[in-house]
Amino acid sequence: MSMFRFTLDNSRKIALITFFANLYFYNHIGTLYQLARGLSLTEIGSITSVILATIFIAEIPTGVIADKIGYKWSVVVAFMLQALGEFMYLFARSYPVFILIAVVAGLGYAFLSGAQESLVYETLPNENKDEGMKKAMGRIGSYYQLAFFIAPIMGGFIVSQLTLSKYMLAILLTACSVFIAFLISLTLKGAKKEKTHNDQNPIIIFKEGFKEIQKSRNLLWILLLAVFTSSFSNSLFSLYQPYFSQNNVPAMWLGWALSLGALLAFFIQKYIHHIDLFLGKYAVFYLTIWPGFMYILLFFTHSPLLLIPMFIVTYASTEAKSPLFSSVQNNLISDKHRATVLSFISMFTRCYTAIMALVLGRIADSSISMAFLVMGILIIFFTVIFKTYRLSIVTHAKEEVLIA
Image 1 (cartoon, helix red, strand yellow):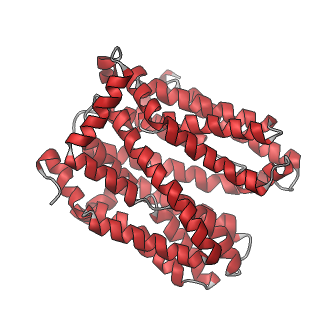
Image 2 (cartoon, helix red, strand yellow):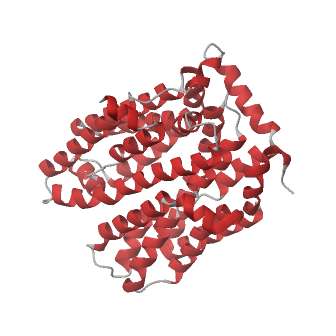
Image 3 (cartoon, rainbow, N blue to C red):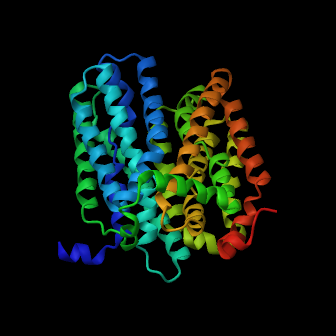
């Protein structure tokens, strides 16, 4: 155990935690399980809305709490809530209980948002933190995608028959995996700088975090970029299944395409530092605009033989920019209110994607391919209009370089 603590720094521990926390063996049968428990499709759809609403409401308060109690304990609480929610899921029998679980899940996501990223950044070595953050977030993102690759395949073996007992076995194994993530989170090392404001009033922390965004044009710019260049990965996840069905893609490829997309995303995230060096100073711009072009190509793709690889590449593109973007925004945020500011960014991003999910869903009712086209156009438009290519300049110059 001592060797385990010695060889793994926070970024590697969080990567391992991320892997175990995202081994959802029941994702591919989650709707079937809820139907078996007597929920209607309308009730099932509303659960996601409750999760997003809880995250939106709790985003800023949990960010302030993270700046108050420390990033480590905010991360620990997040995974404790996630594990609790998964074990509750086993015993859920009615719609109100599923809603309660959704609230617990939303709180867990909110506690993790901002705090985890802040903890990684604050516990990196002081030398060349910018490069260190890219590597760390790339590693964490790659482990997330690896879990997303493995879980559907293993889940298919676990749920060999569409029976309630098999569903519950997959949920139990998922809950155990998340509990392992929680146990590992207890071994994380807290950031030294966190103790400088533990006695400060939470309202003051909130106000100062908001003022920090107001006073920094670059930080406000980053917030707008984060919100409006969202890659709509959740919408892609929900729309690709009926799109495959419409275009006569064999049912077996629903899971395999998702797994292969996650595998490609794993390698992109793992080697993002090398990709950044290869693409040069406009790397963030290229990786931000890339999903936009992929969605437009999906709009024109209807052949099953082309649609499968096209989806795999599109899925892999949706989170490609995240490690580089994380490095840039953390470079501009002061240490004192890092989690609070990151929570502001996350809150507005979730609000935008939640609203757009409803708009895109309405468009998809008429034409799924048209929804893909709209997604692509929006990403390209905002990537260009907000001058994303200037991010590389700001990374090096910080506050000296402002929006033109």
